[in-house]
Length: 484
Image (cartoon, rainbow, N blue to C red):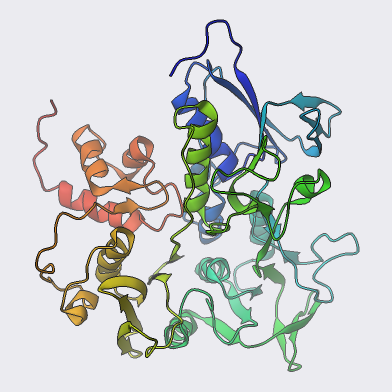
């Protein structure tokens, strides 16, 4: 498809220069490198270039620097990026966006990628009168939060993490690695309540206790006392020089709501990622699609790619079908993968479950199968099984008969009559397969960094770093094949 001779490019404004807004711009630049079809203008509140927020806990742990998590900025005539400027209002009739520097941008299509912000529970002392974090309190949503936390969490100092989800546990592991004394407080009956079952959580909490992290589940925080610590509902006070709040997020929907666009928890979108206004679209953490996806990088990037194809006209009928979330806990020394249905009763109709529990070894595995297909799994300390089962989950392929061997990572025979199975991604965030990595290796990409630059693998949540490194180690024993 080519542009009409003499027609000017359509104007697309993207509000939000986070991971998803930046990916949309990058996808448009790839699809329309000369800027003949569309011109994209991205505006972002933060003063610096886009970066990978998912890896902020890696900065806390010392695994990454701020420069190492920067995202690429398109260098094409069709994309311009402005940082340090905030959109303040939308006029959907005139199709304009007002900015806080007094200027306005006209648009043919508007993409809202405004993301989400940390949700601060109503705890005395956690927030100031203006809603800002209280003394000694920080979230972990942006680079400024990281810098604030690292200034507060000195070696040997006590730190309290409020929230026992993935981000809270990753932050706790990173802080312990920096020498802090860490407590985690979770109001649910167990940590990672949404992703794993209670037996797995018990073993995971014991693993954290062995690292020096005190885990307090089924406890509600009542008051933050600066310079002292966090008071719980049972009267105990956990010592803390800093309080890290990782207790959920709220979508940044105000811009859409004030413009009369449909909003619930997020900005309502359909399969075309279009809002109640046909010229306005929403992607990422601010968007609410019936099939989910908010809070996860892979669906956000998938949405960005689909919308880029739609708005550039390269695939005008592309649709978003919803998310198949997979969680990997990125904590040094702990291998945890969970996905699908893990909370159904073992005797639920048509559900088959196989469980291995090894509290002494700090390992746990639960596999849920229905109609010969993997529908869920929790895998703590079973990395080989995690790779195989996540592939079966992604592809919908039949499960081998020996379920126990599958969990143990042992060789299993494919079900009789099974045909060719679609290749599952190694890097789910960027849909990069083993074949893609092998081709990149044959083309000269011999390090993880080179693979990342060529394929984008490992640049999402970071959960596939181990798998990519293992593939490269295996390829390093082979003689390079000629590339024709």
